[in-house]
Image 1 (cartoon, rainbow, N blue to C red):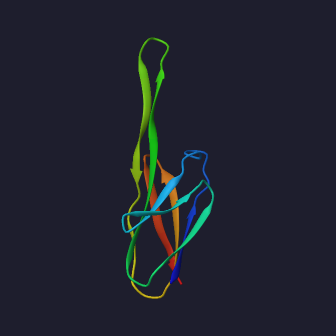
Image 2 (spheres, one colour):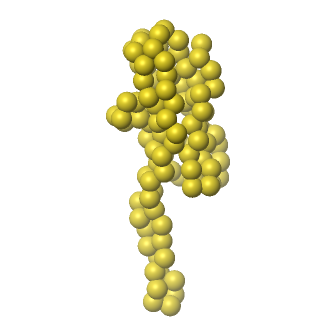
Image 3 (cartoon, one colour):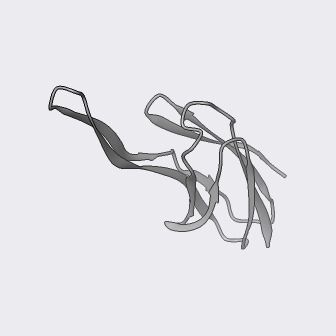
Length: 106
C-alpha cells in the first residue's frame, strides 16, 4: 500500500464547503478548508479527483423576486501511475473551478 496526501489551500472564499475526494469514481475522503487528508491506495494506477457540491439556496430579493445559487464543481483528474511511490497533491478553489495538482511522487 502507498499513501496519498491531499492538502487544501486555506481560503475565505468557499471556506464552509467540504470537498469530496474521489478515487476511481468512488468517494474515499473529504477535506475541509486549510486541512490535509491522507488515504491509502494499492500499487495499481488510480485517478484522483475532487468535487464540491453546493446545495441550491434561494433568497428573496425584497421585491418578490428570487435569486440563489448552487451547483457542482469538479477538479481536473490527476492520474497516479502504478508502482510503489506515494503522492502528494494540492487542491485550491478558483473562480468557478477547482484545481487539483500533483506536487510530487516520493
